[in-house]
Image (cartoon, rainbow, N blue to C red):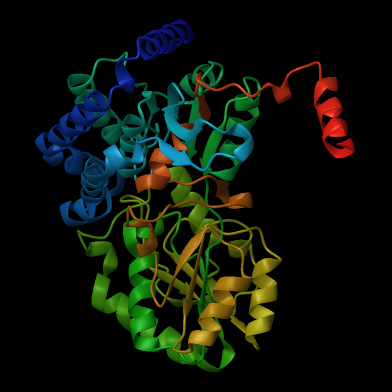
Length: 459
């Protein structure tokens, strides 16, 4: 699409929203049912596209993409009537004979910009929340996952009128054209660098934004941890989707006393879960493109590899790689890794670890493995992060019962379930004042109130 076509599309959606069609709760419910049916009908095509873009198996595609979206739709359909209800609140005595309430209302025309690492989930999940809240939506999936983007465009084109839900594919030119339009809300998932640009462009129209970014999510392993179980769950979370997960454990920060045992367990778990030759494992994904493959390769320090390190430029695959004797000044610790490289760092005391983590930009996630409940509470309370787990990794994002999002450098705002509905809704504060009583004391002239009080006291 060129600039003019994108402008016309945004205008069509605004005209559609202003008709009030999307305000009707039944319209939203029917749209969600329609979307669910469409996903089920095209599930095979979606999984094939994910295999081409990221090397994902059908099982992983369902577990991490289509299955989570279907779960979000089911949850929203179950609760949408309650979410959309007006909420009555207490009225001050000064506003006697009134009803005060908060009314959830859609923003209007919403732009959702999604990334390439979970291209179906992170496009359609926020779409579910935006539809439930009553908005019209323009989706902009990533150009780096072209097969999935094309399936989304084709699928939604059959499912919805573009005045209600539309998909714009392309690269930077289309992104620029979209961000120059006046939207009522922008929802962006991606890198911090692009997030800053989105926020800058949104400020021209004072458009509110949700930014789902990333960061270097630490995984603390305390000396009391169950190391075998910790290794198993860390390997799962880190190397899922070939490490290209925004909430993957970016690095291990463990007690110095248990480092060697932990590394041994991790090496064993890599072999058990991904095989002794992961590059030959058809269920092990690939790096999205050559650019990111080269970036990741440059982060690997050959002298510090204790597991993995192999790579295949033809298939864009990198073995699960563990690096020891890493410091915070190493190149691999200067940026979010977003790939199958796991640095291991150590601390002397937990307070030292907490201080170091808090001196870094706020991560999107944080994980702590420990058998000591007081240590878990201390870390959860004192460290700043978006969300996380105690004795597990990444699973906190797989529920519609809790919001998902970061803060500071890892983003702003959240979604999933009610948090998602609220993200795409503005709550109007309304007072319904009755007409059968009108107290005169608030009106001018105020002198008569003073005279009445003087008369009362003198009497």
